[in-house]
Amino acid sequence: MLTAAGAATIPAMSTAFYTHSDCQRHDMGDGHPECPQRLAAIQDHLRATGLDMALQWRDAPLVSREALMRAHSARHVEEVSAVLQELSVTGQSRALDPDTAACPHTGAAVARAAGAAVAATDAVIDGEVDNAFCAVRPPGHHATRDEVMGFCFFNNVAVAARHALDVRGLQRVAIIDFDVHHGNGTEDIVAGDERILMCSFFQHPLYPYSGAVPSAANLLNLPVAPYTRGPAIRELIEQHWIPRLDAFAPEMLFISAGFDAHREDGLAQMGLVEADYAWITERLMAVAQRHCAGRVVSCLEGGYHLGALARSVASHVRVLAGV
Ligand SMILES: [Zn+2]
Figure (tube, rainbow, N blue to C red):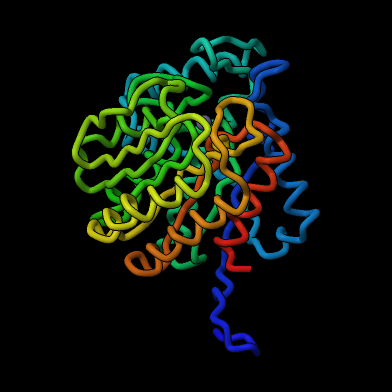
């Protein structure tokens, strides 16, 4: 597409925006940074900017146990599901990990969060939409095959990637994780699965203090020092992620989209800004255009400064939608 001035522009894409009110009812207690207001802030900002009009809003469906068990052990799925079901009946809350608590509404939220990722994958593969963003919580990338960890119960992105491979018949997919924390759960699940290339950067040292040495050849981990800013991250992505992604030639991209590397975020000490998230998304969209017919599914992970989160998601989604 050309503008009147002749400059190339990104054509508008059809972008699905999956979310559900159940995801705002999961509450880990006063003062917890992974709070229900995160999703409200994102949606308010999309409406305030008019970006909501460019998106196809869809209700996140509930995930199936079969889908969860493509990324998690049957024991993990059964145990977590049983606890969350019990809490929904008793009306009580319980800590499942030092950082991770469940309330009576958590069961519905985790089922919608993973369900959104799977439904978005189907919608993109079926060509209903070009790409999708899942504004869901709880996040997923710290949930390992067997453990609840770091605000995460089930690994939404890993569940979706395995759905694309095992159910929809794709041969190769890439998972890109730009959350400021190492996606240890995703690494635990996909390490050694040569159908998946996982590319990430993360502040190191920082929770969960893993990832400096990747555990398998299909993982491209870039640990970066605190106070690293956008220009250095962009250079790392150009030098490391892009050539590896081009060589792997994935058929679909999954993004673990955490926005806690933002300079205003209090849980880490990195210096990204909204323009960096737009740039990263543009580079990934270009990879998707070259190899994947544009197929991208992005799922919210971290991001705890409400204003910075909302503005960064808008920057990301604006590029996905090409508006
Ligand atoms: Zn994070």
